[in-house]
Length: 152
Image (cartoon, rainbow, N blue to C red; front, side):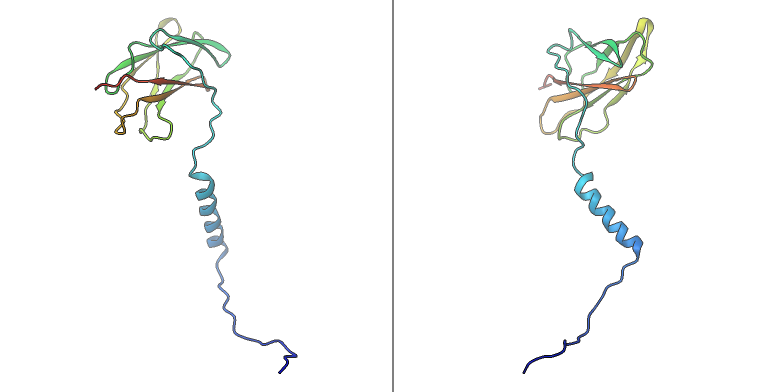
């Protein structure tokens, strides 16, 4: 038996309001691109001795940065930055691939272009001590990786 005409059957079509479609598209876009760590374009400067200090260039000006003591979890230390013409200086501490909470310090201007911040690093429950300080001077930033002294 040959069929000369198409067989007509029932078809179910789901109708979804436009705002729901855009919501689904937005959630999918966030899930694909919003969950990954953003690519960092901040330049990296290696400073072998932050207690002795390092010189970098930020916001087209020479900047010197140093720690008052070797950094260690739960032990206070100072971050000192010398930047004569700076109007705003901050230091943010993080670990790559490990959420350590908010560790951002707005440094306070002192005399002679010196900026000072009192820092206490949290303890990493995984036992890691590899940190990155993002030093920002007037909107220009540099990443400075360092290793904290383990307190135990």
